[in-house]
Length: 612
Ligand code: M6R
Image 1 (cartoon, helix red, strand yellow):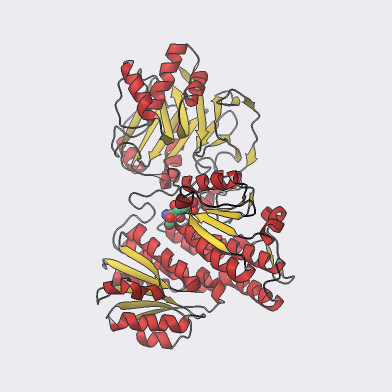
Image 2 (image 1 turned 45 degrees about the vertical axis):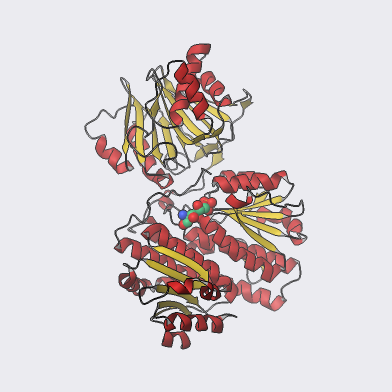
């Protein structure tokens, strides 16, 4: 994880770096730091958030037109001032920021200690900056060459930027398995972990590939080569991102803004892909792979966290609508348990960030066995989007709150489109049902809009349950993944322990937890197992649990037994996820706010999990 940002040009670097760090803070917020070259090479860094760094730098010399900045999610070494980046080399002539893990840092460190290097921090990163300087001095090479040689000696993942007091007109950036974007302006360059710190200055970006090193200077010169010394011609992409999309737009938190964006983001996931009148679903990104899908004997869906929950919904959809067997796997388990993968398998990799290390590794494994890999990513140009054979972007727009909300509904929307298109091509859905589902899908954004009008009622419920110590979430069939997602949302932002269960599984264990203190959120919308879920609610009530039920508008049965009901618009059961998850997102949000938690940046978490 960690966010990195750098600037070289004619403007003052500090404000650019700080603004960039605020935007990248979702990637980690254990410590923050900047380095600037003015009359000297100065480093300011401290434990805590970017706002703590701002306080720390008050009254300090922050001038300079070249600089680097870092926001950390700690891996090696506890979050403190010393372990914060940037890290100095031994002579203090070089500084470096890093996102990733240098796996062989221990033997390298040992070797250098023997040669007299003294280290200040517990980080793997400091080893790399010492190594670069060590090579520069021992082999008498210039800085870019020293960086190149050093990177040939490290094992692991890195996105780095190096700054040297002796080369104040040069920035060197490199990456492997951690993302890095280069912004190309008029005689100025920006480097960052994603495009958000860059977008307001230039739309021209270069996505660095693994093992590429970019050397940029003040005169606007950009040179890219690989760590094996091959020259690369930079390919300049035009950024599609809009600045408003990465600002809070009047909401108290990004999470709330993103929950409220869902009518629009779900619509954007369908835009240009669904033609309800003509009964057409056209996913351009996977057009060439449709036949693979249609003839697949099996689909494997991989992802982590919320993306894995979306994958579960995908499983139900593909099995229901396309009659293709599906396995949903945690990417982290899949990659390490020697899975059986056939060349005929289609693997769908789901990831909001497109950078999740476990998902990337699982993709590489499946690819090496000859499977076809289809990505469902949100971040355009991300590593997963680029490494998959084909894919469909979710087009939810930047998601900044660490808790995923609009990305989930966008992922489910895209998976629904895929399952519908493939099921239709395989002749597994009746024409009538196909057309019904298409027009129902088209009505989902408006229905989500209606759910958002329940905001005040949900806020009130949050005030009743905010002090609970545990929560149980129950759902069945399509709403089981919603129960898992609701529980994950609550625990990650409010730190209340919460479990999601298939409603019928409750009696196999979790029922023992139920007493008058236990809030149980049950998704009891209309569907094939509605009556069974009603019985499960009775079982909870018989043990005095407090039931908050999400029901279909007009429901009269659950209303009589549950303590509280949240009525959501009716829809086809296959699309119910898209609607019933929204009140659970709001409930978690308000509980977390009322408990005084940092909703957008919950403790110990980061938005983009680029370490294993
Ligand atoms: O970027 P990804 O979708 O690959 O991220 C996967 C998980 O890390 C992510 O969904 C995480 O669980 C969220 N914090 C959940 O809100």
